[in-house]
Image (cartoon, rainbow, N blue to C red; front, side, top):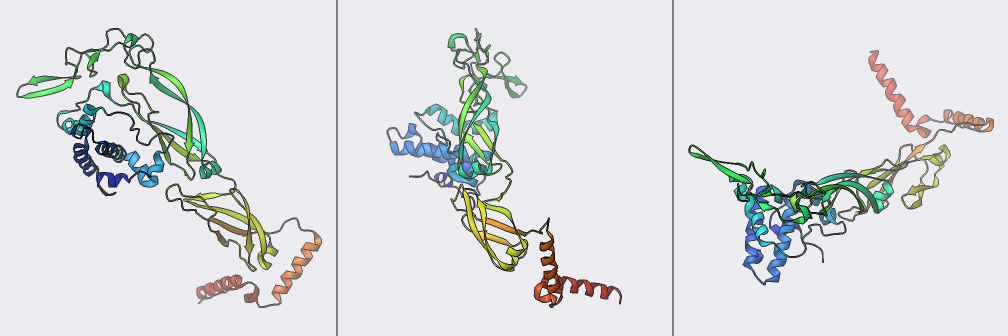
Length: 378
């Protein structure tokens, strides 16, 4: 069974503003939170769905990707939301109310618990790879949690001690006249903890520079500037906090034959003069082979033929686009004497007939030119 629509999960419309989405999330999170529904598996499942939906719709980039591609935008081998395992109920409640009090009194979360930054990476694909889907292996530079101190920054992974100056809050309050001003703790610099003995591998940072190899699944039908999210593959958070995400931007290289516009493919096919005049059948390329195209007699250069269902399958609706072939009548070159003579005789036969019969466009054009000059000389 597929995932539910995120907007329906929160009970909001696609045009809802951020504040409406946040309001709906708080209301539903309070109602279905595990602390208020202990032992209720249905409420626990509902709470997971609410958090997953809010994580996407509260982020402008993720929301844009979801509006365009639906749940397929986040399918990358692991869950699009990353919600697995048990809940940290105190953290869940802080997610619900933290931004409310933070807006009034300043950020209540300590620096040491902040999530890592998201990263961006560009991948070049051929048109065939973008249309059919593929798996790309990449090697990217990254900061990773120090394995020696487990990301704490403290030697041997010992737990940092709470800062006595701010009592582990990362901020201190100072009274100035009638007002109380909150500022970053000058002792722990907002971290809330003090590392007595820094790790000698990461020098107390909790992170080290490394390269990591990733296999990125590219879904069929992606296009230029599409973005794929890989959960937890971004920068590590401060002092053991969760990683950010990695956003992979798709760059599709120019193709020697086809041009893509949304889910349709376009190409130009040259035909000779005889084929255009008398008609016939030619073979035209498609991405997985070739197909026959019937050319009717008296086809003009630039005529566009549509071959339905031979384009790109939409990543969101699964609708198959079309292939549009524009025929270009090619002027023959390197003619031998016999060919020149035959064309000369053909040209003379046109002169002996009414031009409108063999060249209706030429007659309309030159009639228009004559009328134009006649009006100038009046």
